Structure formats: C-alpha cells, structure tokens
Length: 243
DNA sequence: AGCGTCAAGGCGTGCG
DNA sequence: CGCACGCCTTGACGCT
Image (tube, rainbow, N blue to C red; front, top):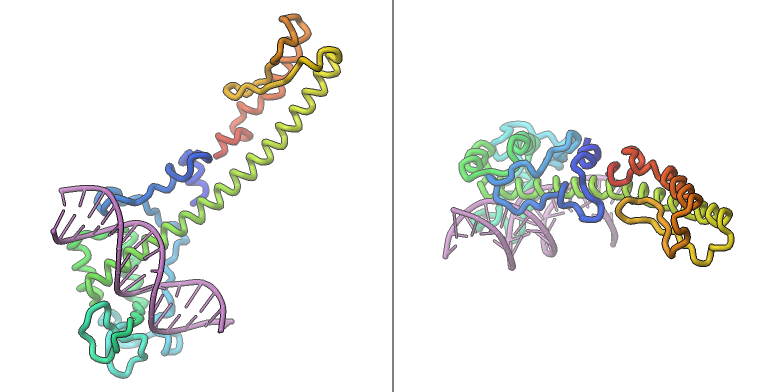
C-alpha cells in the first residue's frame, strides 16, 4: 500500500519528497493526517516487563503496571519520570517501560489521531495512570517512528524510480546510437555536419547544423525517429508517469 | 561487548 | 511569552 500510495501522489523525482513527505511542521490541529498509519505499522509492543517470563504482568493492567515504583519491582520498572519525586531513583534516568495494555491503548488512540490536544492528553494520562508529559512523549516518539518508516518507504520508492530511469536512459542512449548509424548510412557524406539532437521538450529527434534543407530524405528520417519515440506516450514506459 | 529499541531530556521553532 | 511540536541526543535496558 505504501509504495503504491507514493506512486499515486505524483511524487516528482527531482524535487525531493515534498509531495509525499509533508514535513509536519504544523501543530496538531492543523494537519492531522500527515502521518498515515501503515497497516503493518505495528507499534512494537515489546514484551513489556522483562523480568517476568513472557513479559506478562498480572494484576492491575493499567494501574501503573510497568512503571511505577513498587519496591520489589526490577529496577527498570521504577518510575521517576523527569521529576524529582521518587525515592529510590538515584538521580539516574530511569527506564520506564510501558505495559502492553498501556501501549496498546496509546496505539489505539494514535490511530484515531496522531496528535493530542491538552484535554485528550489529560484524559489519556488519567486513563493510563501516566503523567501527561509521558503521554505526550509517547506520541512524539510514535510520530517520529511513523515518519521514519514512511521515509524508508519513500527511499525504496525512489530507488525503484532511479533504476527505472537508468534503464530508460540506457535504452535511449542505445537508440540514439542506432539512429546515428542509420543517418550515417543514409547520408554518408554529410555526416560531419549532421548532428542529432533531442529536443528536451518534445523528446523528438531533430536535426541540427543544417543537414537537410527540407528535402524528402531527411523528413523520412525524422518521421522514423519520431516513430521510434512513441513510447514516450506510453504511460507504462514513461518514467515520469510511472513515478 | 555491541547493537537495537524506546522513554525521556534538551533545544530550536512556529504560532496565537 | 508560553505552548506544543519536531528533531537530535542521551541513557536504560534487552538481546545476541
């Protein structure tokens, strides 16, 4: 889905990602849709509490499961986000691990809207028994992950475009050579003055240097050249159309 | 030990 | 000016 979508966006190869990768510089309520959730864009519900086999923590699901501070929990489950409070945490930066339930709820919420307004944040924090700041951070990191993923998809897409264009270029070079040979065969004596150029706008072969002054032979040549370039109108082979 | 993941810190920026 | 955000980085942790 991702790649196809990119194709349909009309992303222009030479101009970077502007059409697909909108840089999310606006606040949440301005462009809520820049981050598309890919179907396979799994949140990485890490096995939560590692100390426990299987990572499943019994007891209260959302009530501070992973994080928070009970004395006998593994040290990584201690809370102390940012602030001072907590007892045991020596200044150290904790490592809060969100529980499966917390993660999945956050994920659900993220699917509905990738950004939060203050009220939503508060509500979610209450619901998850987390600090609003933690919810905010989670969303920020989640957006970053999504963007990274999208960047990777776009990168793959551009690689394919590059390969297509490279092939196309090779083909065209070859064709130019053939046309030159053809022209040489038709006008062996004028070859020094004759040069084939390709009009960048119409992509057709034209003569430069005054080879032919309008006689029939040269016209035949040009029509032949034009014929050989019909693929430019073919959406399947036109690189820009493919991209 | 090295690496990947992820929550959180810090900083710059745009906007009302 | 404060707020929310994005981006980059840091540090804790798990895995191999």
